[in-house]
Amino acid sequence: MEQFKLGEMEQRLADLIWGHEPLSSGELVKLCEGAFDWKRTTTYTMLKRLCERNIFANENGTVVALMSKEEFQAARGEQFINDNFEGSLPQFLAAFSRRKKLGEKEILELKRLIDEYEEGDND
Image 1 (cartoon, helix red, strand yellow):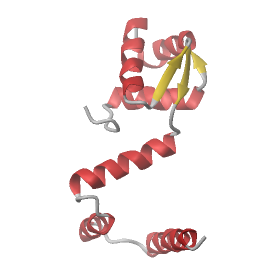
Image 2 (tube, helix red, strand yellow; image 1 turned 90 degrees about the vertical axis):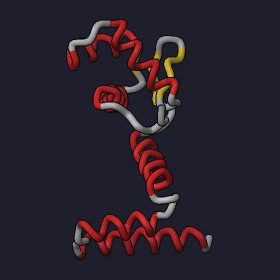
Image 3 (cartoon, helix red, strand yellow; image 1 turned 60 degrees about the vertical axis):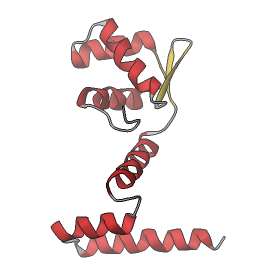
């Protein structure tokens, strides 16, 4: 099981938790019943999977995020690049740009990100 690879329903549950956390596990059961038509046991099974991946924790009946949605997305992207492009962001960008032409706005955004990264290295 890959830590940052979620199935469709795991992702939907994670999004639900991020949108409402912190929340009691009882509140989560009610939200999942309304949103997904899940029984209590299904909610707890799915929550346990996300907790085992250290994305969320159920601390004394309160569900909290161990990482923000943005941190999770960054980690998932990093894992994807590591698994598929030998950890090389330039290899990923080269492969991506072969199939999809980058627009001027996207190029400027990438340049801005690189400039910010370089400025951070000089501090």
